[in-house]
Amino acid sequence: MKLSAILKRENNNLDLFRILAAIMVIYGHAYALLPNGGQSDFIGRMLGYDYSGSLAVKIFFFLSGLVVTNSLISKGNAYEFIISRLFRIWPALIATILISVAIIGPILSTKTIAQYFSDPLTSSYITNNISLHTSYVLPGVFELNKYPNTINGSLWTIPYEVYAYVILLSFFMIGISRSHALAIFTFTIIAAAPILKFDFIYSLLPTNHETAMLGPCFAYGSIMAILKDKININISTAIGSWALFFILKGSKVEMHALYSAIFITIIYLASTGALLKMKPNHDISYGVYLWGFPVQQILSMYISEYGILVNQITAIVISCILGYVSWILIEKRCMKIGSLLVKKTSNIKLKLINRQTTDVEA
Image 1 (cartoon, rainbow, N blue to C red):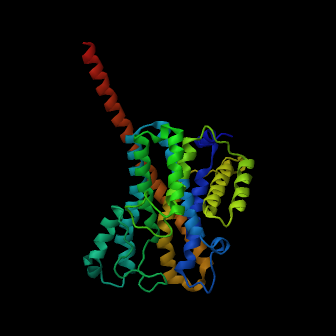
Image 2 (image 1 turned 180 degrees about the vertical axis):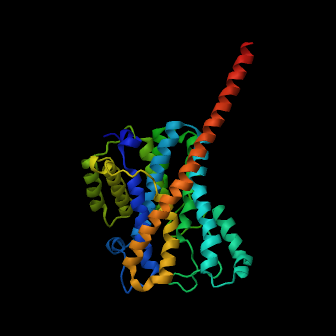
Image 3 (image 1 turned 90 degrees about the horizontal axis):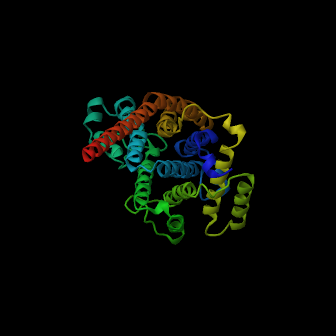
């Protein structure tokens, strides 16, 4: 099947893989958030240079690059792209931040209510995270946890994803997506950046070892969306990508080959009949991702003695429930508002054009 056909919403179950990626983040974080007695994440043991949470973030970035770029080049409307991203990212993020500050913080803080709300860290947590300058600390919260003073360690990826959207829109507006040759050249430069140890994509943001491959993973999704009419995805493609990984294992491009194999396999599996029958009715992945870390920290605070597995299972169940609530009460409604705003603006623009045309004819 051509990738262009798979990307039609009825032909894929990518939502399921986003949910699984959010669950992988919870699974991986448990080993850092609880006393682990020497236990470690099996993906970390197997690869050495990555673990389940980090791999899940790269899957998120790839799927985001694939789906968002496909939407942008299909609709060709920069204004609609901006509105849809604003109403997709910020409402659930703001809700998570405000609930953390107004409810979780005061209940769990070792400070008095007055001390908690008068502390500059409380207000800066809100303003910094909403403006994508990630803050982690609320006064007196999780001070004695194994991973102390961090209420939501998952928020660090949000600025990088938004920045990727900005870069994508910039490239789209200057016409890179309309030239396959230019798009492939740009992707090659981005993909080579970690190997050549320069980063022009996230040069304005803080960098660490986790950020190096985020740009290439997002770009990989973008280039696949741009070339969707020329790419076939089937079982042979998936097997071939894994064979290439094993050939390149130990080389400087091992990570690139691994992520490529994983991404191609995800697209293939997402298009199979078996998984299409399991398509979720609600995309709870963003809510699960946003709430996973605070839920795990709370569980770590109160029931850490029950171990990592209990934390993982309990956190996954609670986070899925919160993700569902977030989707129904916030995300779905705000996305609908964004769509209505785009439609209303387009109607106003159309009326102005018709009026100008009528005036010219008169």
